[in-house]
Figure (tube, rainbow, N blue to C red):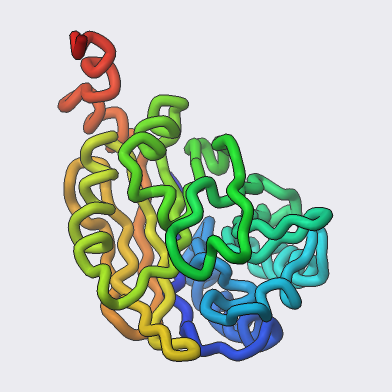
Length: 259
């Protein structure tokens, strides 16, 4: 069992320091709630709709923002999974890190599919999907648009993921994605899918909110509304096994004759 929190943070937090301070204020309540892992939105550390400031706020994997987040993970006893703008050489990536309560990096993932719009002017695509194990459950990371492809969620589920963590920056006009597509991705693979969006607006972009923890059996374990809030759910690997046994899509797809 893993107790997961999805932190739907305010989009309008102005600086990196403001964002870290907001999280620092939230974490004591999550520690008191017995949370094991907290999932934060896409580009949480720097902000999403900030244009060319992305390059100015980008940092390497082990930059100053990482140091601050590692201290928060260690002080709170909670694994922190967050998005940030990553720089490596001349490339800029839309990335996510998860830092365990011992300060160890559990996973590092770069966004695979760069959607139409401003992101294509800034970010290079990543490659590959890595799983990590935490508190006895297997986790994968997909970033926002990545999870809208059935192939990506099916791929990590086929690798053995019990939980797919999806930091996102979903605009207010895309309600169908958060309310229908994302729970469907969980159901059709028999996995948990945790989707962490921002709330409010930033530089003229309105975010949907509506973060969700979708359960493998087709239900919602927790759903946020439109304001900043934190939702929490217990994740149970037995529910994953039961869902995949009841509807063995992952196995039966291998026997399909599509030619």
